[in-house]
Amino acid sequence: MNKLLVITGNVSAGEGVKKLPQLSGYETHFATSGMQGIELAKTENPTFIICDTILPDIDGYCVSTMLSKNGPTENIPVLLLKLSGGAASSGITKDVLEVLIPVANSMPSIHSLTKTANLQNNTAPPEYSPSMNNLLQLLSSPNPEKISNDSLTGYRTRSFNKRENIYYEGDEPNMVYLVKKGKIKTVKLGPEGKEFIIDIHEKGEFFGYIAVLENSTYPDTAVAAEESEVLLIPKDDFLLLINSDQQLGRHFIKLLANDISDIEERLMTLAFNSVRARVAGALLQLKKKHHNKKEYTTYTLHVSRDDLAGLIGTTTESLIRTLTDFKHENIVDTDIGEIKILDIKALEKIRRLS
Image (cartoon, rainbow, N blue to C red; front, top):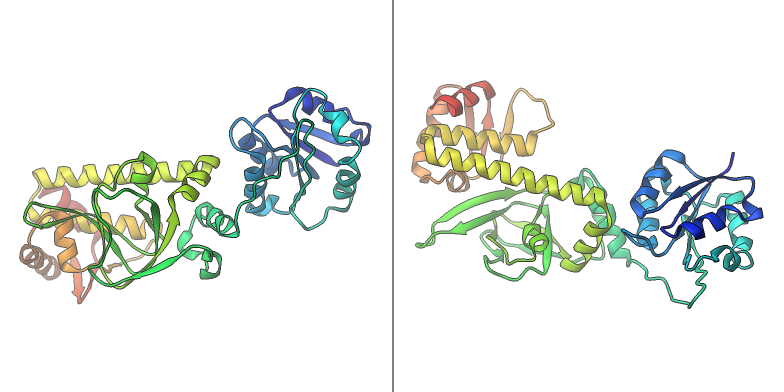
C-alpha cells in the first residue's frame, strides 16, 4: 500500500491534507517536528513526503537535505510546502496535486521537488550551498577520515608547516577545523613558554569546536606537530548544521564528554602518579583514542618524544629514560617517531600501581 508522510506542526493543515480525495488510497503518517519526521521516514519508508517549510525544531529545507544524505531515505520524493493557515488543503489542491500525484506514482530518482504553496505570501526557499551539503555529509559520517577528498570541495584547505600556529589562545573563533593530513596539537603555554599539550589530533579529527559551541575565545593554541593539511569550516555553517541535526549534536556532545573524561584522568595522574605511571597512562590514552575499536596484538603510536613529554608534564629526558626501561621489560618497542605497545596489561598494571 502507498504511504504518505506529512511533516507539519500545523495540525489542521495536516488533517486537511489527509482528507484530500486524491489521497484517499494512501496510508497516512504524521510527524509534528522535523526530527520526528526523519525518524518516521526511516522506519515507515513512505512513498512520498509532504513537509512543511516551517517546523518547530528545524525547517523543511534542512529536513529534505538530511533525508537526501541518508541511504534508506535518499530517493523518497519530498514536496516542500508552506502549510500556513487552517484552510491549507484548499490552497494546495489545484496547483500542487497535479505535481504531487504523478511524483508518487512514478517514484522518480530525484530526491526533492520544491514547489511552495504559500497561502499568505510567496517566498523563495533558502537553499544550502553545495559546500554546505558536502559539510552535512561529512559531519553525518561516523568515519569522517574515510570521506573522499572529492566530497570536501567548497571549503578551503590550508597547509601548515611543522610548528606553525593555526590559532592562538584568546583568539575569537570563526572556524572549526578538520585534520585532513598530519597532526595538530592543542597546547597551553606556561609563563616561560613551556608547552603543556592538551590533545593531539590526527586525520579525521575535529578541533577548535569547543570555543564555537561555547561562543567564547579559543581556550588553547593549536600548532602543527608535523607537516599538515587542515579543512577550514566556517563557524556559521557549522552551527547551522549542528543546531539542525540532533544526531550531529549528540556526536559533538560525546566528543566533549570524552575530552572532559580524558582531561580529568590526566589531571589525577599528574597530581598523584610517578613519571613511570604517567607515561603508561599516556600511552594507554593514546591507544584508546586512535585504536579504540581495533583488536590487535600490538599497537603502534606515531608521536614524538617531545610531544609525549608535553602530554604528561615531564622532561623529554625523563620520558626517554622511562621508555628505555619499558623497552628492556618488553612492554614497548621504540623507533624514530613511533612507539609500539607490546604488553597492554603490563601498562595497565603500572598505571594502576605505580
